[in-house]
Amino acid sequence: MSASARKVVIDDTTLRDGEQSAGVAFTAEEKIAIARELAAAGVPELEIGIPAMGVEECEVMRAIVAEKLPARLLAWCRLSDVDLHAALTTGVPMVDLCVPASDQHIQKKLQRDRGWVLREVSRLVEKATAAGLDVCIGCEDASRADIDFIKRIGAVARQYGARRLRFADTLGVMEPFAVIRTIRELSSALDLEIEIHAHDDYGLATANTLAAVAGGATHINTTVNGLGERAGNAPLEECVLALQHLYGVDTGIDALRLPALSQLVERASGRSVARQKSVVGSGVFTHEAGIHVDGLIKDVRNYQGLDPAVIGRRHTLVLGKHSGTHLLRATYAELGIEPENHELEILLARLRHFAMKQKREPKRGELLDWLDDLRQQTVQVACGAAL
Image (cartoon, helix red, strand yellow):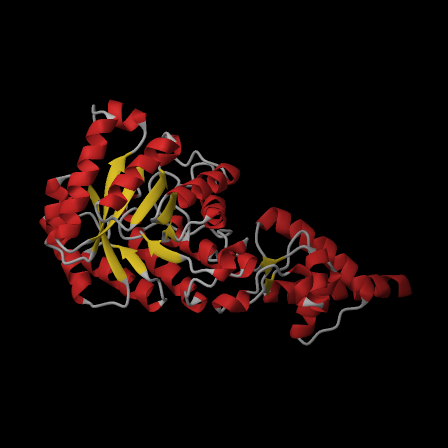
C-alpha cells in the first residue's frame, strides 16, 4: 500500500452510528465522556449526533461543542432544510448531508428520481456552505449505486462548495477488491476528500476500510468496539492498529488509550465485548496450546503478530486441555515446587481431564492438591510393596 506517504483521517461515528445499534442509548453524560475520551486519544473528527432527533439531542451536541475539544465535530443530516436548520443550532462546524445514491433508495424509499437528487444536492450544499459550514455529501447505499451517478453527485456537490464525499456501504455488501477499484475510480474523478463508511454484515468492515485507504480514501469512519446498525461498523481499534502495523499509516491515535476507551463504550452501550474480539477482547493475548506456549517462552516473537504492549497489555498463559509440560512445570515453579518428569506426565493427564469437565483453568490450590494426592498415592504404593 502506498498510503504510508499520506495522512488518513479518522472520522469516528460512535456517537451517531454507534448509538444507532438496536437498543443502545447513551445518556448526555455518557456522550460527553465518550467524546472527551475519543479526543484525548487523538481522534481528529467526531460525528456527534443527529440534530433532527430533537431538542435533547441538540442540547447534548451543543454541550460537546462547548467542551472545545481538539477535534472537528460533525452532525449527520438528511438532505433537508429541517435537518440543516437543526444542525446550525448546535454550533458544529461541519455537516454530513446524507443523500440516497442508489436507484433502489431514490425510487423505493424517497419515491423521487435522480434529477431531484442532483437539484437538492446543489441547493442544500450551497445553503450549508453559505451558512459557514464545511460539507460532506454522504452517499447512502453507494455500494448498490451507479458509480457514474455518484460521480455526478460528487461533481455537483463540489461545484457548490462541498469538501468531501462519503461512500457508504450501507448494507455491508462490498468486498475489498471491489472497494479498491471503486474508491480509486472516485478519487481519480473527483476533486474531493473521499471517506469510506463500511458496515460489517459479512465481517468485512475493517478489510473494506483498509481497501478503501489503498484505493485513495482520505478519511475513514469507525466506531469503538464496532458498534453500529445490524452487525456494526469498522472498529476504531482494529483500523488504527491495522493501518499502523500492517501498512505503516500513523493515524495519530494513542493506542495505549484504546482499552480504556473500549471499556467506557462497553459500559455506556450495554454491549459486552466478546472475549476473543480482536485487539480489545479480554482473551486475545491469552495462550494455552503447548506448542504456542513453548514458542513464546523461547522467544515471544514466535507467536506474536501484535505486541500487546502497544495497547498496554501483556501475554497471559493459561493451563488447559492443550497445554504441555513446559507451562505446567513453569506454573509449579511459580509455586516453589519442581515435580519430577514422571509426575508431570500424570499431572498433565489430570489437567486435561479437568479442563474438559470443568471448562476452566485450575486454581493454584487445586494444582497443589493434585501433586499432594499423587505423592501420597506413590507413598502408599511404595509402602504396600514393602509389606
